[in-house]
Image (tube, rainbow, N blue to C red; front, side):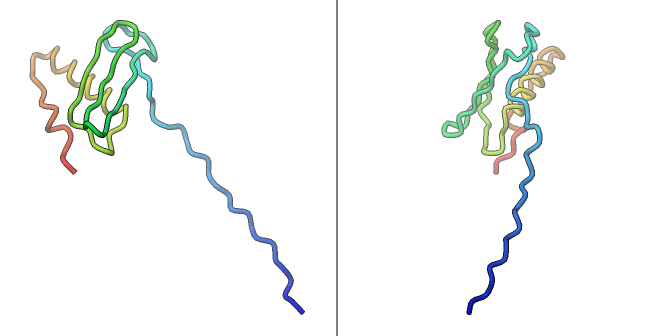
Length: 97
């Protein structure tokens, strides 16, 4: 005599919400979804490049938490600092982990 098998309750998983953007509008030519960001964790660098006007931005302080949106906004901050006549220190923006 054995025990009756009971049915297991199904595990419901939540679908992930919308993620962060990976393509952005170029701050120079204003083409939408023209900027693509590539992150190289092995060399600790990231590059944002516009496919339309070939403007680019490189960042050398990248860690495992860095997302493409972080690199793009660092580029925007550098553009705003250049327009204001200030130099920006990108090393202070990313603390070492």
